[in-house]
Image (tube, rainbow, N blue to C red):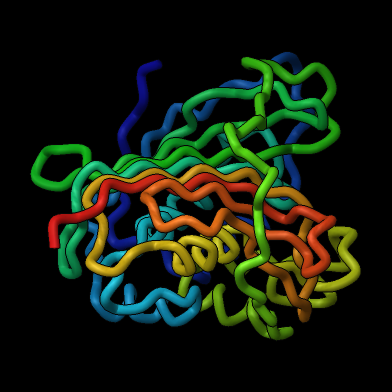
Amino acid sequence: MDYVTQIIDPPPSRTRLLLDGVRALRKPKLDGAPLLPKERLVRAAAELSGAGIEAYGRACGFRREQGVPLSYPHVLAFPLHLMLLTRPSFPYPASGMVHLANRIRQHQRLHPGQALRLEVYAERWVAHPKGQALSIATRAYGADALVWESDSLYLRRDVKDPVGQPWDDVLPLQEEGLLRTQRWVLPADLGRRFAKVSGDFNPIHTSLIGAKLFGFRRAIAHGMWTLGRALAAQQPPGGLDQAEAHCDFKLPIFLPGQVALWNHPVTGPRREFEVRNFAGDKPHMRGLFIWNESVR
């Protein structure tokens, strides 16, 4: 597919994203199959700022000696995701889009202060049993080389006759032998705190009233916070050279609340894990974390 590149400089303000979101609450009824947006949104020099990394680390539980968190570049790219989802060319209202899954791959070590060229575009439609899903690609380049990439899957519920390849949510995990290794107590304001560092002010995460408007009894935790917290609990010290994280989001986590990390009690560079309720019978996220250990 041929994309039209648009340089976004400076990045959009929170106010602009909010206004764009309001304007995108209503979309004309589709006549036929949905079309992929043709825009490729680009930030030419997005900095991995030390202050931003530190704030994100505090929110998710990363320690400074772990280096740049594997999931942090998503924070820099997320405003471009919102811009794409609220463009007139996107066929569905952005509100109510559900984050289903995320795949992250890092090819080179990232450094505080490093500038990345970020590119975000709609990659493909996916036919999901509950509606129409869309994969949004994020590619991060440093010195003309791809250093980090992710694919985020978003779902629009209740769309009849979805197009694209069938959705496959099966991660190659061994659920047998997973043990509860950590308990996380989540405060009521977790969504608002994470919104300040991630830029995701979706009211289902930040407001009781907003959550109820979308059918939730209380505010729910960000899926990307859950992933970040799980990676922080397992990422080794010394930073990462190459790494991958795959996750499927399951049941929402209501705030306040408590959940637990379940994984295999191993020390090698491959971790299969789930975030469940404390009793262990309700999955909130299923994931796989792989890394090549850095040379110390």
